[in-house]
Amino acid sequence: MATTSIVRNEDQFCVYRAVESQGTRVLWELTSACNLKCDFCLVEIKRRHLPLARALEIADDLIAVRVDKVLLSGGEPLLYPGIENVIRHLVAHDILVKLLTNGTVEHPAVFRLIRQSNSIEVSLSIPTVDADEADRIFVSKGALAKIAGTIEALPKARLNAICAVSQLNVGRVGEVIDWVADAGVPCISLTDIFKDPTSPGRFRDDCRDLRIGQDERRMLFDLIGRKRSQYRGRLAIRTTQFAVNNHDECLAGRSIFYVDSMGLVLPCTITDNRDWRNTASRMRVRNAIAFYRQAISGAPESSCSAHLASLPFQFGTSGH
Ligand SMILES: C[S@@+](CC[C@H](N)C(=O)[O-])C[C@H]1O[C@@H](n2cnc3c(N)ncnc32)[C@H](O)[C@@H]1O
Ligand code: SF4
Image 1 (cartoon, helix red, strand yellow):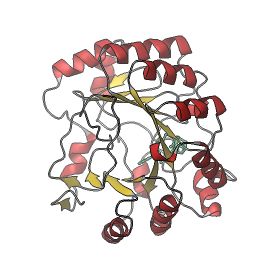
Image 2: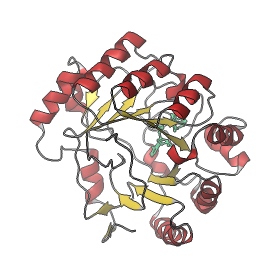
Image 3: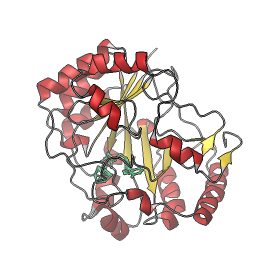
Image 4: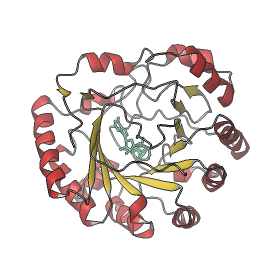
């Protein structure tokens, strides 16, 4: 059976989505280029990306090591010139593709492909539903109207909204949830601001300084509880990175991997990765994945572990 994402209320530390198969998930940052300029963005600017032939080799490697789900991200992945070919190649080999887009780039060919294939899901960034505030957060004019247009162009059942919660938008999260529910999108993921502290962010050394405070966290989770009741059966609300749950398990380097825009494989997006970078720098993707699977038996040393230890509260239940 084809892999699909689970759509349900849940609070997890890990930003990688659950899949029914609990299979191998890869976040692949196809390009670091972007048309927007979010201040909280964790993506390091690299100013180059791989030619399509190399990207297709990477796709071949992901197919060869039997990956179940690839999250195609960026930067803005719809700016990668070969995006359509990469998606087609992965989907043709039964890999579930999740496109993580800011929703402001129109790409008719890819949108057509998404409408045709149940193996493609899309996550759109929606940090606010106030048009002026959206322009301030994205540092671009007319972003919200473009996102609304993208939602209309795509099959709603396969959409997910991502709202990164920061000091810039914490007062607007309730409105974002209402807007997403009214738009007929079945799931929203709220995520705390995170970053591997050993690599630079896009515009600031550490974007985690935009995180919300303790009181705001408590108020946010009260709001989430109310909204889950209000939209039961219509909208799933997921949270990631805010706190640890007793069923959380780190699978970085075993069934979770991160491929950067130069084709370097790391155990996870936010794993404290300097040593791994050196180790895997010359390995091709299939060899690096095989290496990690053999070398990593438990949760690897990571920026998560430091963060986990400092968390002020833990969830006792899964928050359904
Ligand atoms: C890095 S972006 C790449 C894809 C696309 N450009 C977009 O914005 O959706 C993927 C997701 O990460 C979120 N994000 C960016 N920086 C973040 C940070 N420091 N902490 C948490 N989420 C972040 C974005 O809001 C977006 O939903
Ligand atoms: S979060 Fe996404 S849209 Fe915003 S600057 Fe980063 S890559 Fe671009």
